[in-house]
Length: 108
Length: 114
Image (cartoon, rainbow over all chains, first blue to last red; front, top):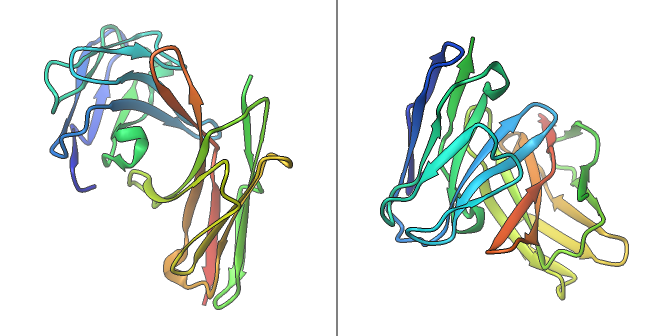
């Protein structure tokens, strides 16, 4: 989707491995969000950042950390991946007006 | 806790008919509500926003209503086309300690049959 870029698009991890999902936006929006989408559960907020340098927990933050190093970039880190974190992850800006195309993560 | 329900997981209609999707919520007083379209393998795409003091909003063939008494929003697609086939999500704005958060429904899959 235009304006929000997520990398990687696909990833397979082994249980216990770590990785960082990257998100960058070029719309100069202050707020950025990380969601996960699971079948039958809808989109659930993991973390969000209202502005550069601030972050806050959403509904399902356990097992994740985030970094908002500058206005453009908001990364999501899994320190020790678990099978329960198998999901599709979406980054979004400005209260969800623009979503990225997602990262499909499988933890085996 | 907040609960958002969207009608039936799947809806099939004939091309040219009006599709009506429902979003019901409980334990909630949202300031506004948004509707999104999501295609397979893609992120949600914002369609319409309606505020609590608005009864109806239109955009081309799309119409959204918002009834805060019934705690319900209806999303209509008139003169439906096969290209309208997708999953449609509703989301309500809720207030958290340091900002706003959207709560999403699970979506309704719409198929428009030629």
